[in-house]
Amino acid sequence: MTALAGHPPIFALATGAGRAAIAVMRLSGAGCDDILRALCGTLPAPRQASLRGLWRRDDPSGPVLLDRALVLWFPAPRSYTGEDSAELHLHAGPAVIAAVSDALVALGARPAEPGEFTRRAFAGGRLDLVEAEGIADLIAAETEAQRRQALDQSDGRLSRLYDGWAARLRVLLAHQEALIDFPDEDLPPEIEQALLGDLAALRCEMQAHLDDGGRGEKLRRGLTFAIVGAPNVGKSSLLNALAEREAAIVSSIAGTTRDAIEVRVVLGEVPVTLIDTAGLRDTQDEIEAEGVRRALFHVKHADCVIAMFDGDAPPADVPQGAILVRNKIDLGPAPGGTIGISIHQDRGMDVLRAALAEQARALTAASAGPPLTRARHRAAIEETASHLATALDMDWPEMRGEDMRQAMRALGRLTGAVGVEEVLDTVFGQFCIGK
Image (cartoon, rainbow, N blue to C red; front, side, top):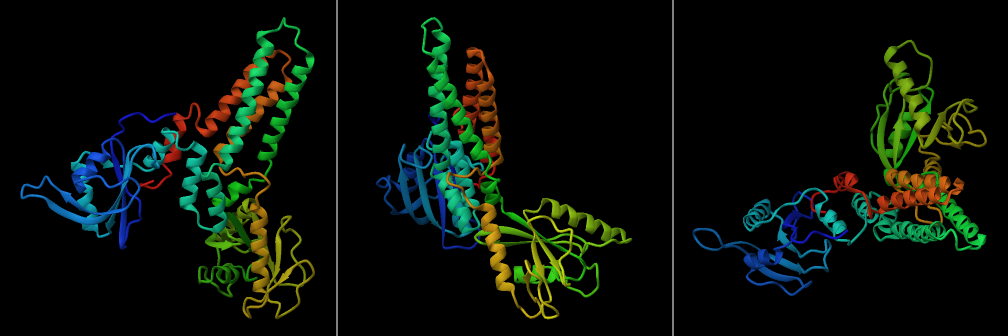
């Protein structure tokens, strides 16, 4: 896909709102050179910062100096979008930003929509759809692990895997077309057998990519750890200790927590939402009973369950894989297979934090290849693998070829090579304005 010639110029702040020293205004599109000449008098040398006065020259009283700013000029195609582009490094006062924005509008530019710069980069072939999503993830990354995963994707590691599959499938489809077009040429049967073997191997690679436990998707969105147990075992106190703030009310009265309380923390470089739940017990109180129901819901859907107790033995009905935590070890020892803590005395908390961090890392640890990161990718590869499975079961070459073509189209939609108009608004609508 190539950019349409003559895209009108757009502009937006690339830096966040709020009090700061510098605000970066980005421009892109046809006519950026004329806009810079009008503001600065002459174009700066390409890709070299130049200190310039920015002037508005249409004022009836004469030219008005708006700011003195560093100006960078990126002529096409060596720019982020592939179009003529520029950056204005302004003083970040609201009045300066407003005055320069008004001047840009007067010179024919318009404010950019969310994700419009990156959408133009995609349209101009500067990156594919998977790489564009990686940039969105990089902007949203909260932790070091998320940053590494997003940077790998934005740098094309995932795209190279998918492009490699598409190239192999393209060759196999060409071989399949030859078998269809030249049925009377007495082609050796080994050719078809080799084609089927390569097709099966490709499908197996895709299935292995799908069978990753959703690790990349979990890292991208963050994990959920639910703290469950009977009333008064210290669930709210544990939430507060891990969050390092008073997020939940702590009381000796049973049933204090009646709704789920969520706190975002970082464990093992992974963002984790800790959920403090209502104490699990039979109750006639309608509100508390609803809290118990919600607690059981979170137990079912959490990535990890922290099962707390304060007796001599853990409860018998904890989910498989739960981390067993015996609180109040100042009153009695922790049984084997559990982590003993005393929140009141701050004992054992380092061990628990280390165990939770290790669990978070294990749930998001990358395999040998680049991980799946989005449901859209998963759906496209599942569709591709399904078409390949159907093709392998086909005896008629023509029907097999059609399923292989359907698989090619599904892979093309994944990277944005074909038929993605219906998903572009969804993908680029997630970006901030200015990117």
